Image (cartoon, rainbow, N blue to C red; front, top):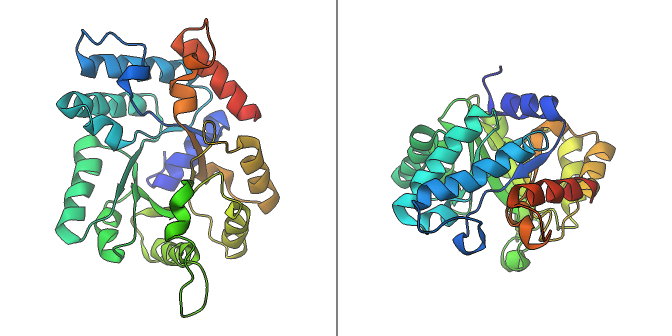
Length: 280
């Protein structure tokens, strides 16, 4: 097994040839659990059951830390157990924290993510500059995904703003910077978060291919948000992109598929949802 995060991504992709990442975001009111029992154990059981059901269809998991923090210590305990379970299953774990603070605060976030939880990668908001990113790059073999162009509707509030110097939108400047950070770091793998619902994703992938920068890509927005797995896969194929470095994320469409597929257990429904996503 390789030592870098890129190696981990490629190796997991070679086993299953799927780009699908499973976003594990607990919302107790939507989960088939017994709230009279220990909440940490119930959250763990729910997502562990789904992971085991779809293990041959996914090549990463992405828990969003906010969904666990809302349940206090039980949530943190469940997160820790799920990270360990995913790693036992040889699934790369991306902690979606959207971290991004200066100096010692980022050092603390990095220590929590990489030392205490033991995840393989994190997501980072880069708007405070390189000081917010540097502490994460100091962990050998770990990955970081920089928010570049997100799938939410109000991304245009800032990400599309034109920079005075050259008139390019802010998200392209972020992309240029993270490419530079990747080349200047011998210890970490720097990737990009680009929403599946954004029309610009094709141009971004072409830009990366043309520049010779095969960086990890995390592409959320497939499933409930309306992004197409097959369309992204086709764009990657046409661009000749190194697909093993790409993960296309779907969260609630898998986790709460039982709301759509009536009459099936939550694990059976999750499997059906994954099948549909891969064909969509």
